[in-house]
Length: 595
Picture 1 (cartoon, rainbow, N blue to C red):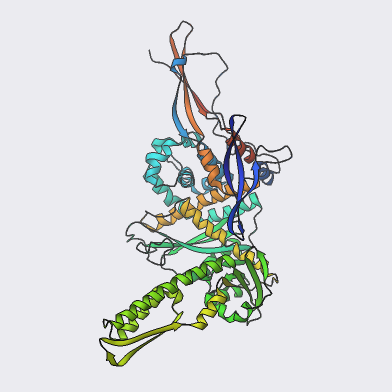
Picture 2 (tube, rainbow, N blue to C red):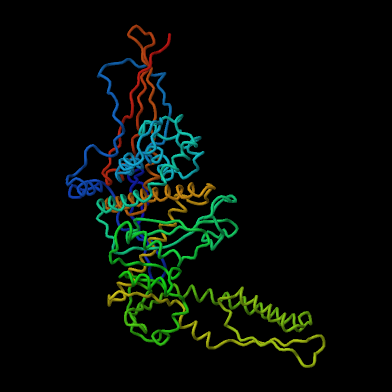
């Protein structure tokens, strides 16, 4: 669910409000449905911060709040004469989104954890602060370390929140911060798993596992992990690394590993399972994986460790259950999706047949497109033979093989005969004929839209098993958010440890993202933070400069008050539902006017 800002005129004035919208699947396709219109909370409702605070300290609101900026000395109440013509606004900075990100960082306890593990050191900027700057930048405005130094940090209010001036932030220090952060990866993952569990009462009995890839710009000659392999980003021309991620059923990440770019997905399973067990113990967890992870060796490995699994299967395995596809005892789990429970040849495993109307239409369209391409290619092949340009049987079979490779979806849709003519007819030396393969056509019509799941769970309801498997989309969404919103790709670092540290920073930024999503869900704001972050990004800080004068008209001191802009009505609704109160002032300064 996501937020949509709405506006409508009323009594000659424009009014802004929020609608909570969700995407739903209907018989006519995906549609958007308004769940609720959001306004101020009623007295009987609790905001999201109160709910989180009760889990933390068993009281309504932890004190002091994690979102307060550093305190400053308040001036004594007095009366100053201000020269109105000289009043101006200076030094505007981005405040709202960095203030929120810094609060999330502290909410997760990462400031305390890294202060204990990394230490302050003798440097001007402590390593924990450098780690926070890297992560907050990735969360708010993903960019390079050089861009953080030259542009991003200077335009934000982090100087007031962290107490670090922009002159102290430079790219070399940020690079060194990556090196200092990486050795603490295991401790950070374990801490986050416990902290997020305390905040949101998460369960870890169902783990979703998936693998993606992200590519490099550059040769990466000094990085053995950078290899060419199957690219999910359609960048086979670039070297890449593979990232294996484990998330909970809510999409909360609890661990990841980095593999060489040419590593097959199935070869990552054992290492990832052992890594999770080393950190969190060997509990009887349910692993949900797609068919790219599946191999008999991996499933045997999980069974030997008393683990459970729900996995996808290769399309070819569907052929074993052809007789079940024609039966009518299907159970509908949602509009256009039906499932059925069948037992395999081994008694310790269960198979779930599923079929989707939308998927059937998609696969039918794909088959028709490939059949058309295959038929057009066969006609060209036949024309070449009839004109005498194609005379050799071996060459004709090679061209047919390349055609089938290009049109692999319909490679068996035609039975093709190529034979040499005993006596040529003019320049024609070959006869090429074909006919439709009736068996392939019948099977494709039966299997289109169908897929097969495999599990060693004893659950007898196929709908529950299917829904558990479909939660794998949370892992896929994790990769999509990391790539699109947090811009993990492309990687510009060339050293292996810098690459690993870059991925760790992206992992931490994604944890902040999902923490915000869980908080929004408890505040009734859906679970898509992008709109909220964009709204808070409109809130700025700036210096209100007030030149004063003495009673006899002479120039006096100049007062500089660093203030935060007031949120508009729609932003106030969001802040109220989250349970946050924006500060009004950040700093008060007095400057003596030089005569």
